[in-house]
Image (spheres, rainbow over the protein chains, first blue to last red):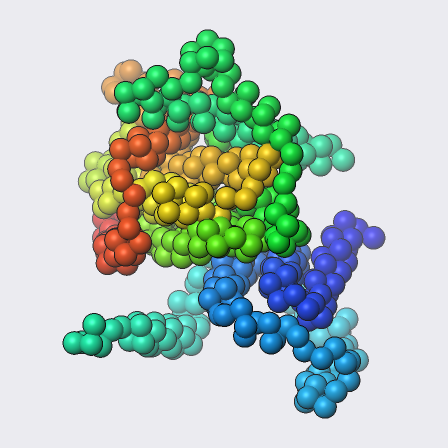
Amino acid sequence: MSLAQVLFYVMAFIVVASALFVASSKNLVRSIFMFFITLFGLAGLYVLALADFVAVTQIVIYVGGVLVLILFAFMLSGKETLNVLQQQKSKFISLNKLPALLLAALFFVVMVNVILKSDVDNVYWVKMVRGANRQIKPNDLMTDNIGINLMTRYLLPFEAISILLMMALVGAAHLTRKEQGTV
Amino acid sequence: MNFYTTYFLIAIGLFAFVALFTLFGVYAERKLSAFIQDRLGPTEVGKFGMLQTLADIMKLIQKELIIPAAADKVLFLMAPVIIFVAVYLGFAALPWAPGLVPANVNIGLYYILAIISIETLGILMAGWGSNNKYSILGAMRSAAQIISYEIPAGFALISVVMIAQTLNLQDISMQQGILSAEKTKFLGFWDVSANGGILAWNIFRAPHLIIAFVIYFIASLAESNRAPFDIPEAESELVAGFHTEFTGLQFALVFLAEYAMMYLVSMVGVILFLGAWNTPLPNIGAVHLANWTTGVAWGIFWIATKTMALIAVQMWIRWTLPRLRVDQLMNLCWKVLTPLAFLCMLISGVWRLWLM
């Protein structure tokens, strides 16, 4: 096995194991911090897939933003609410877990189907790229490519997303604002 | 296998440098604060008290590791490590001299921004793990402050990136001196590609970057939790904020992280705005000062000197300005720095299109 393969398996193991811990742990704070390890492992997998920009974006947005927001929400909520959440009955199979189990099972079936049906060695577009000798090499400049594509080919979706984010920002600012005269 | 030995050596070397810098930095800070407040500072241990920090470290290492009974042990023990490692990882992408950079990543700047944001997580972990109201208040304040100030800092950096057209820190450094491959213009009209020196630095290539530099510098003070932005520690209100409960080696790690962070943010500022490892001396006619003072050893000397100078300014500010109240802090960030940073970014775009 090459070093890249060893690294892949190590990181995949870290991601899966930490994700399992996140889902099964009784201690909510620890599962949030464990989620950090999952996200970091995922970033490592992206680097192995030569998507370093995506990996760093993952860390900036998920670790620096989303995770910290989750922690904030957690720390600002009262201790009583959290205690109720943490003292669930520990039966593995119960009626109120049925929808979740069903969803998970269905999703699992879909995933297995995807893996079985996709013939990974003979995918059409992979073959095409290989034939035209246009694979991405470790030293290629990927950021330039992303920038150019965002500003030309994907300009409309990019602008639409930025307007959506703008609306969210304005909404958030409006919600936190004090009403005039009721100070 | 030789390859990997070099990697390990570089990592160990960087760690040794960070540790040494912290030793020196703590001593310098104590002497500087003493000078500002008309005191003497450390005088007893060694000549001029120079061995004082060494003695302090010896004391910290020997101390008992105390874990509060109600603390979350795993989080409490992990937190200082994560805080320090997050800062230490950032050093991997910093260029030291022409051709001397631990990891020449093409998204170096973005990587450093990402790594800095991990520190917030470590601080929150420390605050929650200590199970102490002062710790958690300090951690929340710190996280709120770091997240807010990342925005003006990020936009100030983007305005440089728009001028430089690259995220690679080594390329950005290269552009600001005589080794530049493209034409460098002083203030947009005078071609100084051959002169180099201080004239080719980013803050003089485009004058609005001076404002961007000031914005970045203020935001970097906030990101390293130092006065006047030290409400996360606020001795008079919160004992010591998020590191109230730490003793011995753990406290040493938190301290190491603070000084490493000071060095990291200052060095990023130097690389992006103040000419990185380029010499400040320009070529004047037949006197080729810039050519004589460019090289690997000179590069390390210049970048270290400039960074230390910036850190000295950080210390100077810490010991002269009072602490900002939390609403003043947020007002400064959102109503002054962020719009100014946006303006800088806009000017950068126009500058790049029409004047370069």
